[in-house]
Image 1 (cartoon, one colour):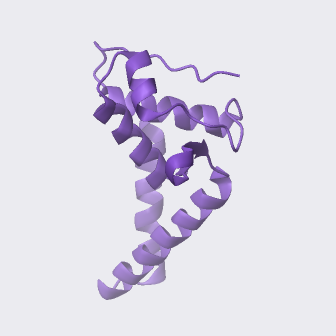
Image 2: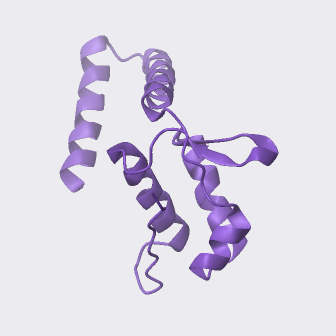
Length: 125
């Protein structure tokens, strides 16, 4: 099993985002199983013909999203995304609830705002 990533330099989407999105999708679909070791930043950048900072930015975003985990000098690996994603979503929801309460929104208004945002986000994709 090999990581299959293509970067279109003419695309409107930045190269780091193309890398991030493709790795995230492959991890979600199971094409990259939990524990799969990703190439080193430098090696992958060289393979793709990109700057190391571009790949590093994609890896940082993936780690922030809980898709991968970095184990120091051992490298970066596909994480058990479901657990990390659920935990991060719960943290975001908790922060939203606190903010909504500070703004004086009742439960119905806070929930309506979330439903509107979800509808807008999912209808756009």
